[in-house]
Length: 172
Image 1 (cartoon, rainbow, N blue to C red):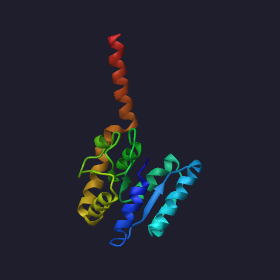
Image 2 (cartoon, rainbow, N blue to C red):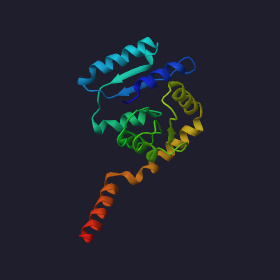
Image 3 (cartoon, rainbow, N blue to C red):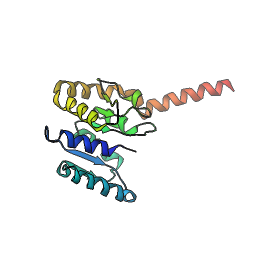
């Protein structure tokens, strides 16, 4: 459901034009078969040397991963909210994602990232190349990312939730 195949296929499309490094984080031991399937696909596509699979990361380590990346790619077929996108944006990391779940409300098209128009790997490849080739755009998106989700900090969300509960309590 995370669309990793689409990312692998997009990487294969642009690999001849531009070498990139893709780090796929996540996947518990129970998902080992899925990781092996994706590793096999990366070998079949001839991009195994560009792909690194990393097991799940502790929450307090995630900012290190986000901060060392140029972009977060989420070609998901399904998301409920998209907390990973919020975390990435809060670390100043632009996001390229499918418009599923709350992603369209989180990613500001052309300002903090891009929303994919289709699930076709070629479209993701085009978007990635556009992002990679435009340093000014990358810098602009990185600078815009964190402020775009400032209202989604845990303390601000808790404040708004308390306000809503307060309104409901006065109605009773």
